[in-house]
Length: 447
Image 1 (cartoon, helix red, strand yellow):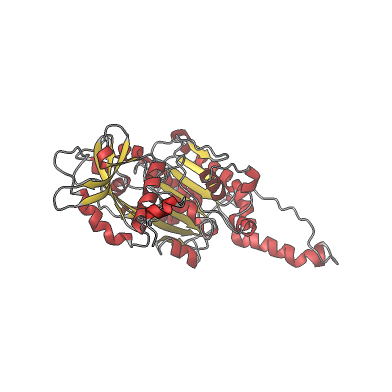
Image 2 (cartoon, helix red, strand yellow):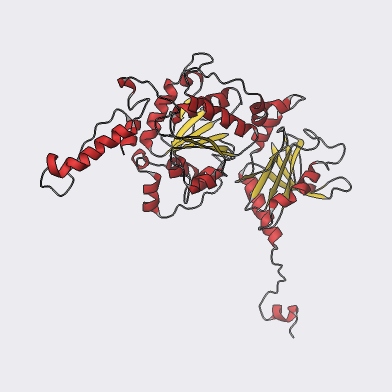
């Protein structure tokens, strides 16, 4: 049997290698994700807590009886949280008690924002869960990646005895009464039920309202309240096609606050995304899901490419490459995502766009299916299929504020039934036909 020295004499090198363990692979992925989110990752022997805005220290020795934290997170020189690393495949909810114990194990004398430490993660490098200890009743949630140090600093900078009343979830416990004037019963019920759902920290909520019952106006009403009273920093409003985005922008611009008589766009900046540039001062961003996907991939998208529905794009593309973390659009970019006609845009290839963000997701639809209920965890906060009483309206409101589906259906059926007998007798093919609509929303109803 040749020795290593014999092999070297023959011109070969002899190495002893160690295959990385699943735990090693998990930590490599975690290191990469932390670096992408702006954290400096260092060993405890090479850590300067004052040199970085955000510092993640590996294998940090906690006080007696608490073991080692896989990562201790420092923000602006003070300890703020921990990460418990596990190999891929481990059920992370089962190790939350372990990371919770680590938040209480910081050695005496070390600077900390508060004790126990407010933030904790459990991660395999593929799957990650996060708990915000500043919330009234902290609860873990799945996140795509880690938050930026700047985000933690923003959450922590005003930390004081009353700071717990300043988180979004805490403010949801003390929302002012809804001004009901100008709202229909369905809209009042939808807003109130949604706010109750958010107050108990339900991450996904579904609102079912029939066509013509004012879904978009309802959405603008609760979005305004979530920004003004609950402190939502930025809301994403997703539409199916570009023309619907233009129509939605007009409705935001026309909305008048019942609290101060300012129009929405006079009080807050509303941006309709038409490029890959996000206005960081905008409180509401209106976009198609295909444009948002392109932005996350760092690509441009022509406006004409937004006019095809998501369902049509799925038939064309067959597959959408997976999204990776984009430092220019961190997971905390949006606090709330509202997806209009959500049954069209959030399944199969595109749900990864929604699940990229650490945000509450609110769905609006007139026609939910089993997939819709499943995605929203069966949390149907509002179901309104018809009005409880007759609604009086004028001709100028028809097909704008009020949609009479039977009228539209009657016109289309009459065209179909008389096309080859009275309009074009003897023809067998439908000719090119021009249909006049009052606006984009009316055109969508006709289609």
